[in-house]
Image (cartoon, rainbow, N blue to C red):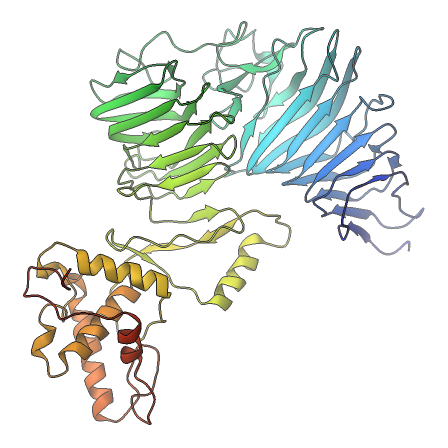
Length: 576
């Protein structure tokens, strides 16, 4: 009606189809929006004239032949594929309203030109909001082709952790491959860049679009006429002539292809590693490597190649300023490849460092073995992040892909994972995604240990977590002073085994290894148990009655996790 605003939602289908109709709104009616949430491929072949917002929340969304979005107010591509294709039956210019912003949240914007023809498409402002995104301009075939995607502006939202991949399109000349031309980059007109001579003009920073953008296995750069290209490509800005262990400066983009070692603390802008042989080992020599530009690119252009960085510390940004460290793992399907960081990733003074990991595919495995202390958070946009046996990550928020189970901490590193009940996890899952988010990931809160106060009752821990914790405590070779108070001489109590189990249960359920620091809290907890027992009140960490014939929670715990009597102080808690 003329007074209402409507929305058309498509998504309850078992397969894709060709949409030969027209999506429109009534004359004089309010703006109509369109949401496509199906993971299937939809081919839109005719003009769509509605004036509301468009959201693609999954699958492939192809506009070919007469398919257009000439009046839509905005386009959201949420973990979906938005393709403008001139290589079906006929080409058509201006398929998209140039005044409509295109927001990518882990999405892809692709233009395919027509074979044997010079074709182009123009879009408005492209905004990178989150996730691992792709922008591509591709020719429709071999021979003489030229496909050009013109973007009015390319920016990122404030605080965004979005990363961008632009497939290598060569030099962009007619008869070669596609080009991506950008009028305004990072809020600056690209026409001010004099052919790449000034590496800080035209929206570039030290010759880069940003540490968050790559062209295949190199950082992305830009010059007018040719458009987006690889750093060090002919006509584009290049890597520094300085070496990592020489005399580099803070604005240098350094490239390494073989083993190298640091001789002192070193500051560069970005570091790209692409081994020419089987291994590129970066020995920091106990020094600190500062990536002031925030980019670390780990490329593997052949099978069975490895990159190892170790024996030192890594940080990003400038001193005492919050910064992002972008780590790109780019094997592109090369089998037998590995990337390992044994160095410790840390904050830059009081400035918090946030780790943003992007991987090209399922082969992009990054292993962290260092004792990392950065506290800005961890974001995984793609690939696989592995925390090694000796590794750890910071104590703040971590974002995980939807469907991935939250990690449980190792008992020996002093982190405390805040326990969530199943219903709470469901509520947090919905709250973290938000009303307009699509597969954006989950937020989980990790906190440093805090001693318990009067609230000595705790939720019952997950059994697998408890078993892992129990094994860790039993096998720990340390002095009795590092064990929770009450576990050292439990056999001296009248109910020694009973109290020892209780304390071990509380110790593991709270996931803290700072035993001596928690002694006061445990004494208060023990006092509460005695008072409740004397008053005939329920005793237990999860309100299970001690009387009335019910099975005591500690007894159930003992049956599920049997323990042996402890050895004297200074030895294992249980016999091996």
